[in-house]
Image (cartoon, rainbow, N blue to C red; front, side):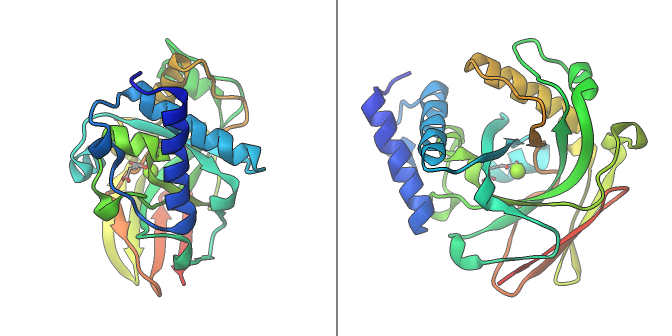
Length: 262
Ligand code: OOG
Ligand code: MG
C-alpha cells in the first residue's frame, strides 16, 4: 500500500466522476507510477462504498482477463476482479443507451449463481462446483474510464475492471446438465459472426475463475456470499459497439441473448 486514505478517496472520486460524466481520464498510474495491487483494490472498494452509500445495490461479482484472448488483447497476464451494480443490469432483448457510456465494448461470458458461501484462501474448483446453484449466459458491457483504453492492470482494477453493465437471462441450467469447457458460443453483430469461443477459454474451466475470485476476496477479508451472481470472465475478445448495432450471442445449451445499442 503506497497511498493514504485521503489519496485513495480522491482517486475513487475521480474515477466515479469519469463514469458518471462520461469523461475519460488519464490512467492513474501515470500520476502515481508506484501504485500497487492493494492501492488498486482499495480504490475500487472506495468506489463501491460510495455507490452503496448512495443506495446503489451490488448486483454481483466478476472476474476478468481470465482468458488468453483477453489477456493478449489487453496485453496483461493476470486476472482481475470487480463488482457489478444494479443500474447496469439489462434483460434479454434490451435497448442499451449509448449515451450512458464512453466507448462501450461487449464480450460473452458464462455466469453462475451460488447457493452457499465461498471463501478463500484455499478455495478450489471442487468447492465452487458444489456451490453452483445454476448456470446462465451473460454478456458484459465494458467501458473503460481511461482515455483510449490505455490502461495497465493496476489502473483497470482501480476502475472496477471497466464494468459498465451486463445482459443476462437466456436459459438457466443445472451444472450437471452441462459440460462447461466444451460449451460453445457464437457472437453476432448485425447478423455477422464476429467471435466464436468455448468455456475452456476461461482458465480451462469457468468455475476456476470463481475459486480465484474467492481467494482474491479472502486476501481482502471478504467472501462470496450465498446467492451471488458471478460473471466468470470473457470467453471472446471484447468487440466495440456503436449506436444502431444489434448483438446476439448464441450459447450452446443456454439459449441466446440479444441487445440493441441505441
Ligand atoms: C478489462 C475487463 C476484462 C473480462 O471479462 O476479461 C473483463 C477490460 O477489458 O476493459 O471483464
Ligand atoms: Mg468481462
